[in-house]
Image (cartoon, rainbow, N blue to C red):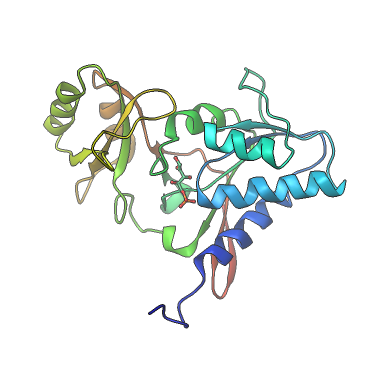
Length: 231
Ligand code: 5RP
């Protein structure tokens, strides 16, 4: 039976999303994140456009699912091009010290990183369960890998000391929007994120990691006692 005293995480995610969407101004090009929290932000931008409160906002979507939702709620979507984005709004799987993040449990890490690195401001939205004191405390590190030779790539990742497993929710491995697989790596108890990220990225067969280090500018983290603004 659900605990009536347990916080309503969906309501908290929405609260965080609305705080970020309040930063959207008419004419902005906005990176649209992926996942159950980003979904609230996309819907809220759509509502502001529909009410006339916002005009001329264009979205750059970080997944096929977010693109479909954006179009459904009336946000014009453009592909990513080299121009900077005014703002990007996205969720995270873990928010660590200095707003370093783990992302990619939703499978969109490559397009998220490609998009969000071009944002003048990256705003993270989450409920309080995503706050950690060290990355890897609760979530694995998603690593997008090429399908060709994936077992060899996984051996190379294991040789770096990473545990974990290929993401396989059913009979077949999970396939990203880019046609790749994901290895959900268990991080060691103690590590330095920046050198580890360089090592993983330098591993043959790896496309991208879910470490988002030094990228986020601001986070709205919603807890039952209120929304904390970090950064
Ligand atoms: C997708 C992501 C998501 O932002 C992350 O998984 C958080 O999702 P949710 O808001 O559903 O918890 O990185 O690749």
